[in-house]
Image (cartoon, rainbow, N blue to C red; front, side, top):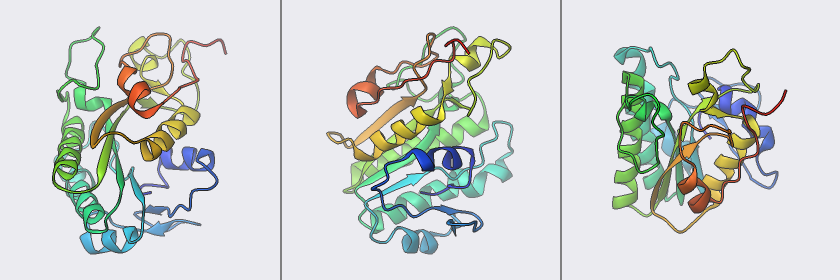
Length: 226
């Protein structure tokens, strides 16, 4: 796993299957986490050697970030991770995309996994790039790829003060962990774009493909009584 020290990585690692032999990496070393610069192809090859699957979470997660801030991790890093995964014979690559890849769609519409990218910011464009790189890898190599369009990940259930559109995109930690597990373990496809939100009463993104193809069964609802 790359980006293991980030918000999502920290939250989901304790919830992932105990029988996974997982190597965690991040840009700088922490307790139990090795240092990995994802823009370094050789370092990625070394980190992925012998791996069955790579979960790539490392990125600059800021929708307002500049091109210079996004380029090393979100653009170059995605390519290097994909190339290293192919070079190491990885079976499955899971890429963290984002609903920002389709955030340019009109308000009030529900996005589907089959929707073409339409980013509303440069960050979303880098996530569209990640999906394109994943599709390329799946089409030209032996690895299968899941690009997960992650929604509004937050450890706490959003309250009524949070705008409805943000609430409808909520992804809880336990649903995120289940989604990543499913993305690693499911089979029957070469390349898949999967929406990643919880079982919210109102959903900014449709979950039909994610549930059917990955066996994802989310449990949490942003509108559930506190």
